[in-house]
Each structure stands twice: as structure tokens, then as C-alpha cells.
Length: 384
Image (cartoon, rainbow, N blue to C red):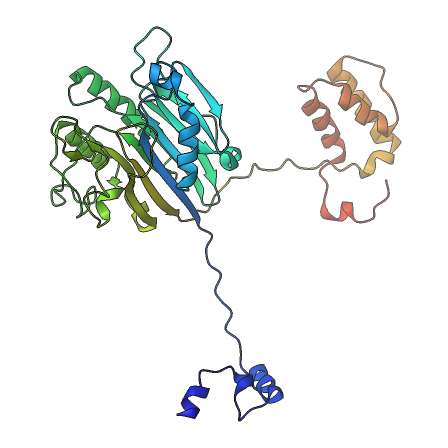
């Protein structure tokens, strides 16, 4: 029994071997080098219908800034980038809080304010994002470059079930055009309040809905699933087994029934990197919607960049030859229509610096016709 226990002790602590013997034995054993793991980037996303962060209601005027409350809640839940719906802000702009910078897009002054979208980006990631693209008061996107590549995050707020067919067709047409404009190699994260119940029919919508969907599908859900099927997108929350509470995001005020209206939608090939997607009912900013948090691990992609073909280098070693310098001056004078040029070799550089940009290739061509191209042997200790 004692020998068996000694097997689990360090080699130097065993009674049969001293420290020096253990060191000699360890030197003869080839240590296994851990393989080089590919670089991965972990990104925590969120979507939240915040129900008015702008100063259009009396409640927001008498209470502290709602953007500060959103900033604290997002930081508490460890979210790096979040989509905000129903911001109720006019025009477009940005506001910087302690931990996040919020970009928003809404209607122009004078129009109805009960729409608008926004994207909250953690301040430490501002150097990785590009200028947001404002499509409409219901759509905006932002592209982020991270260690693994590019990811385009879209913030959306779809029309409600009672909206007109024209508004629904316009929204999904704009969303379809936006998805079509994204490069094929970039990752996509579609976040927001779609006012759509997608149901749990995983057999009819294979790879779009997982086996853990909730509720029954409605008309808006049919539109959303058709769009996801067209662009190879998947609803992230339906691929995780969890309680009913961890999936629903909004309770109907009259029927008191919970529904899943807010969704995180990613590409089908990103499902392997999906770590978690659930509703966070503890987040509070005076709204009746729950925040949806999604943890995504993005696999790296290799960038292939084409290099332009370099121009041949002019051989400047024969510049000590006075005959070639005179010939170069004659050729250049005939091209420029001038007879007075500096005769020293440094003068050639001065002439080239004084010439406009469209004359620079002409000067280089004349020098190249006389001296030819430089070779490898030209650069090894060859005096000028």
C-alpha cells in the first residue's frame, strides 16, 4: 500500500530515490512540448430593448440618465458589445459613459421618436471598431477587427406584429441588402428585438432552429426564419438546453404570458464557437424586456493580402560617367523643353524633387534608358 501511495508523490519525495537520482532520471526523460494552440478571441455580445434612453419622456427627465444605468448593468454582466433597441433618440450620434460608448441612430427632429437603435461598445474596444453604418432608424451596423478577424455586428428593431405590410417589407429588404453587402469571410452577429416568435419546429427549419426552441411561430417569425435560411444564419438560443425562463424575454401585459422576442443570430459555421446564450432577467434599466447575453468564441482566419509588383530599381552606379550625364541632360531637356539643368549628379535628384508628380516617371524612364536596371552585384560595396 505504501508503494502505491508513493507513486502519486513527486519523484524527489520518494524514499527509494534521492534528489540527485531524481534529477538524473528526469534529465533522461524527454519532456513533451505542448502544441501551439491557435489564437482565439472570446466575445460577449448582448441585445436589449431598453425602452427609451432619450430625453423624450417625463420619467427620464426626473430620473438619472438612463445611459448611466445601462452602462453599469452591461459592465456588471461582462458584456463587451451590446445592441440597444427602442432608444427613442433623434438623429444620430454617440455618448461616452464610464465603461461604454453608445452609438445611436433614430428619426430626424419632428418625426415620431418611438423607434431607434443603438450599439454600446466597451471603451477598451473603441480602437478596434470602425465608424458605424446608419441604415435606417431600425437598422445600424458596426464592424470590429479583433485578433481572429473581422466581425460585423448589426443592431435591429423590427416592426411589431400590428405594423403594416409595407413597413415590414421595407425593413426586411433593408436587412437583406445589408447582409448581402458583408464580405463572405467576415463573421456576422445579428442582434435585436425582432418582435418575432420563432417556435420550436426544428424539423422544418433544420440548422436555423435547434432542438430547444420555445413557443409557437407567428407571422414575424416566419419572415425572420426565411431570412435566416437564405443567409445561412441560426438562432443561437435554440441550440442550448435551459429552463423556460432562461429563453423568454418579454411578458405580454394583458395575458401575462412570456414570449421570446429578442434574439441573437449568428452564422451557421459559428455554432461550434457558441458557448452560452440565455436571458438575463437580473438586468434592470426600467424596461419590460430581459437582456440576452451570448458568449461567442471566434476561430482565427488567415488574411491573404496581395502585394503590388515592385518597380525595377534604376542603376545609379554609372553617374560618375560625365558622358552619360550629358546624354541624360540632353534627353531630359528635349522632354522638358528646357536647356538649363544642374550638371552634378545630386542635381538629378534635385530636378526630380522639383518636377510635378506626372513628370517624375518621365525623368526615371530617361535615366533608366541610359543606365539600365540595378542588379544584385550593384549594391555590394560599389563606389559611386
